[in-house]
Image 1 (spheres, rainbow, N blue to C red):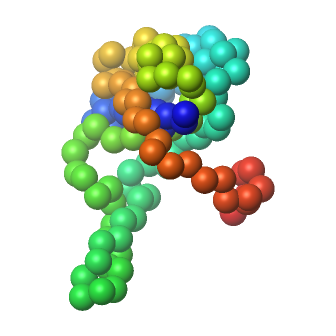
Image 2 (cartoon, helix red, strand yellow):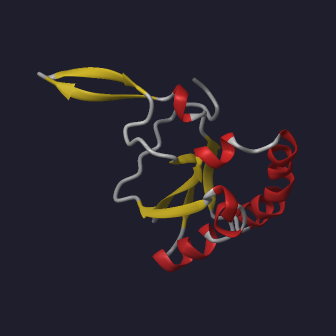
Length: 130
């Protein structure tokens, strides 16, 4: 079964980081990323652009209405995601706990949420393509 893992952060905390502190995040996360990939259970992963560049759509009179920004306002937003292939919820949780957002960055509001995918279909699009 596949599990979607959403990685959260506090946008306010990030906005107040010094350039030096922001530059230190990548190297601090690297060992966690390596441990996560070494499980062989990660199907895909990615990082998201900043929330101010997001748009969302909702229906109105049967038509999609476009709005700027995240659907749910607030400082805690998803900044990355990954999908885990696991034999059980417990295995998926064990893998997710290896991600840096579960082990580092408490001061940045880091967190990982694990959700079982009831369905999962590959589209056949090339990886990284638009």
